Length: 158
Image (cartoon, rainbow, N blue to C red; front, side, top):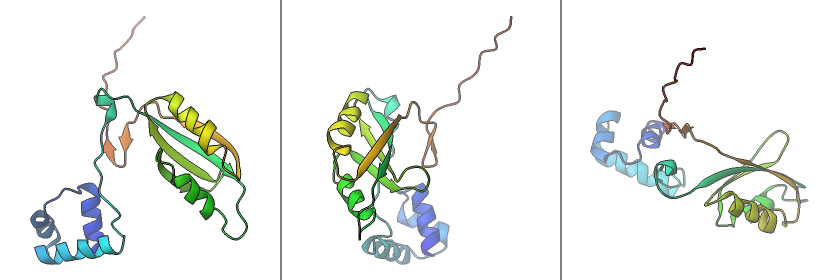
């Protein structure tokens, strides 16, 4: 039942408990207790609202920063990740396989603010070998939610 609940609330965290219970074929109290238990166990880590900032007046720039590091003796990547995570600007940190070690995700008001973060904070940490910053130009789909509407193409003829 846990996985069924998780799939259901992953797609709609605002689903009414009564509706969830009906969809799962379980009692409302049983579903509520299971959700509370998963929150207590940190299986459910939080709830958030996805906003398409492009449709608002607020400027937001999202950047993915590839980071190569020298792992620390005894702790590997964990200590470095902990230090990166402490910055308020950092939205996410992922340990990666491949040509770099971490992906760090930031959302700021401008490319300049992100550049300043990389120069003054991220690149100054011990163990950071190099970084490569990629700016997201447009989000089409984010965590399963389609953000960009399909545009009609104009037929151009010679």
